[in-house]
Length: 228
Image (cartoon, rainbow, N blue to C red):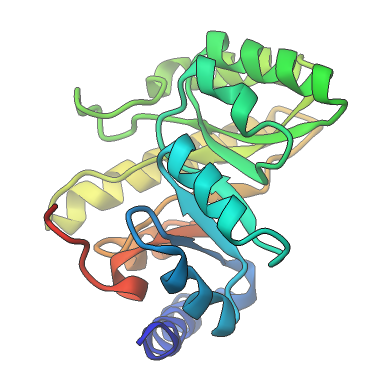
């Protein structure tokens, strides 16, 4: 099932990119495997996917043990507590959800101790919903500036979660806000960011139209999650 879903998703992604004049190869696909067992990740691996996103540190660490040696690149896409950084710092490929200086300082401290430079994205709450994490758009550039000053962190780009709505206009506004921030920061810095992580199963087409370079897709690949 995953292979068929992936084929359909890639075809839709390619068609959308052609329609808007973008190269489909410019978009990275993160398979959001939270709550799904390792066996489903095995299916996705067999279908050619290598990047997997998890929301919870413990679940991601357990799956990593089960799938050790398979060449998976693990993405931390959920809210990350400072006291959990130490459990993933040695092996996480990309942290999508740095949203405070306190969290960034912990990532810096643990990266220094591990002798590595950690790639991160700054999470921005562009939908301005109280239930979402992320720095306010007005404060995003200052946070990027301060995190960039940390020697063992590399700010690769920005991330946002679109509003939970079927209103494409609201989704577009949230994604366009992130793209505007991204372009503005890149115009004012000598170290341009390259990653715009935005768009999930219900809104990835709009995200692509607004410049997403990284999509986080779960349901469209693995099917609906159990209500439990």
